Image 1 (cartoon, helix red, strand yellow):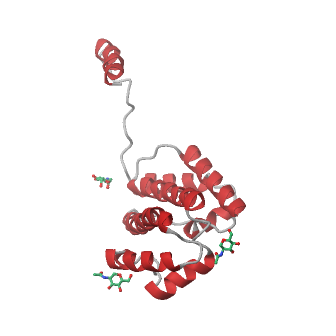
Image 2 (cartoon, protein in one colour):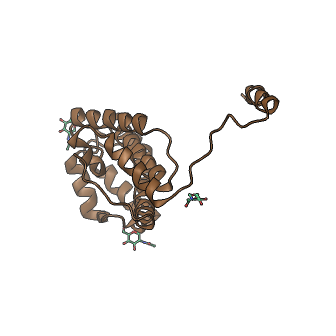
Length: 190
Ligand SMILES: *[C@@H]1O[C@H](CO)[C@@H](O)[C@H](O)[C@H]1NC(C)=O
Ligand SMILES: *[C@@H]1O[C@H](CO)[C@@H](O)[C@H](O)[C@H]1NC(C)=O
Ligand SMILES: *[C@@H]1O[C@H](CO)[C@@H](O)[C@H](O)[C@H]1NC(C)=O
C-alpha cells in the first residue's frame, strides 16, 4: 500500500504541478449550508426522520432505514465542513447501532425489557451525554440479566450498544454546536 503511494506520487513531481489532491475548498458558512442541504437533499423517504429512534423495532422498517442511510452517505460523499462530517458520522453510527442491535440483541432486548431497564436505571434525556457513565452502565447490565430472554452472552453486545449510543449523543452535541457556529438553517426532511 505504501509503495503504491510512492508510485502515484512520482508523476506529480515530474510534471511539477499539483494534479492531486484537488484544493480543499475554504470552509465558510455558505459552504456548510450547501453541504448540509446536499446531505438532506439526498434523503428520499420520510422514514429518515426516524433516524434518532434507531434501532427501529420493526426489522423491515429498520432495514429500509439502514438502506436509506447507505444511500444518503453514497450520495453526499466526501464533504469538508465539520458540521457535515459530524452529521455523516452520526448517521453512520446510527446505522451501526441498528445493524448491531438486530444481529445480537433483538431476541433479548424487547420493548418490554428496555422499558424495565429504563424504569430502574433512568432514561437518557435528549443530549445529556453525562448520564452515560460506568455506574449507570452497571445498573443497565444488572437489569439486563434479569430480563426473561437475556443471558450472559448478551452482556458484551449490550456494552457495545451502550457505548455506541453514547457516541451518537456526543456527536449530536458537537453537531448542534457546529450548526450554530456556521448559522446553518435546518430543513425538515421530506
Ligand atoms: C474541524 O475539526 C478539526 C478537528 O477537530 C479541527 O482541527 C479543525 O480546525 C476544524 N475545522 C474547522 C473549519 O473548524
Ligand atoms: C451517572 O448517571 C446517572 C444517571 O444515568 C446519574 O444519576 C449520576 O449522577 C451519574 N453519575 C456521575 C458520577 O456522573
Ligand atoms: C422470549 O423469547 C420468546 C421466543 O423467542 C418470545 O416468544 C417471547 O415473547 C420472549 N419474551 C420476552 C419477555 O421478551
